[in-house]
Image 1 (cartoon, one colour):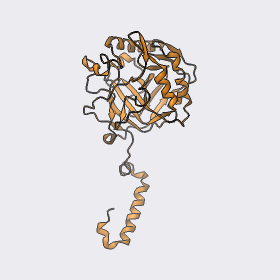
Image 2 (image 1 turned 45 degrees about the horizontal axis):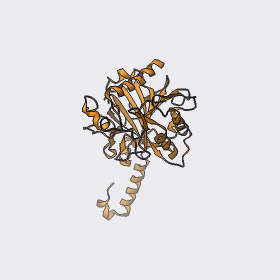
Image 3 (image 1 turned 90 degrees about the horizontal axis):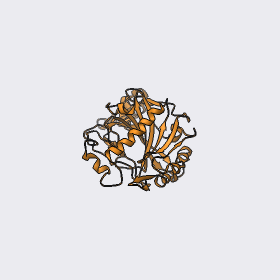
Image 4 (image 1 turned 45 degrees about the vertical axis):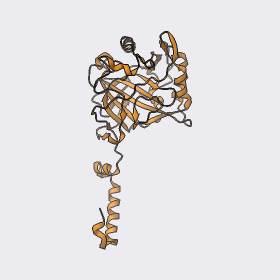
Length: 318
C-alpha cells in the first residue's frame, strides 16, 4: 500500500513536469492548459454550479463512510509543488450516495487564493475562500487505471468559509503544520491526532450536488464522479491565512507564496447537474405523501374556507 501512495505522488509530479503547467505564469497557467491534447474535453472541471437548474435525484441518498473517524489513517502531509496533500492510509472508503461501487480514499488536498475567493467550484457564481477535495478510486484500483475509466475516480468537494466564532480545532491543528512543509518536496509524518471526520467538523453531508467531470489539474482526465456539498466547512480566518502565508511554489528556482492555485470554471457543455435535496415543499409532498401533514392541514383549511365562503366557492383553489 505504501508503494501505491508513492506511485500516486509520483504520477502527480510527472504530470506536472511533463505538461509544464503552473498557476501563476501566463505561459503555463490555466489559460494555456487547453492548448495541447489535454484539458480540452467536453466534461471538464470545475464548474459554476447552477443551483436553480440542478435537477433533484431521489437516488442520491446518504453516504456510508468507513474509517473516516479513525485518527490513525492519515499518514503524511506534503507540499507537492502546487498544493498541500495529505495521504490517506488503507481502509478508508465511501459508498452509497448514488455511487456505483465503493470508492477507496487515497489523499486529499486544498485550493485557495490570497484569502477571499479561492474555491475551484462556485455556487451560483459565489466563490468561497477555499475548497477541500477528498480523492477516491473505484473499488480500490490504482490511480493510473482509474483515470482510464469514466467513473474511476470519485471526489468529494467541500467549500471552506470563514466564521471566526467557530471552533474547528482539527483544521486549526492541520494549518499549524503547514510551516513545516513550506518548501516544495517536503513531507511530514502525522501523529494520529487528525481524522477526516474531525477535519470536516459538523458540516452537513446530506445536501450535495452531483455531476460528471474531470480532474482539475493537467492532464484533466475526464474520469471523475464529482460530489460537491452545498454547506461549507466553517473555519476561523487564521486557518485560511495559514494556507496563504505558509506554503511556497518553486518558480524557476525561486520560492514564491503558494496562492491562487485554482482552475477557473469550465463550460457545462450540456451536462445536467443533479442534487440530493428538493427545496420545494409542494414537490416534497408529491414525492413522499406519507409524511404530508402539511397536505392534510391545507385540506382542512380549504374545507373551512368553502364552508365560510360558499358564495365564493368557485374562486377558492384547493
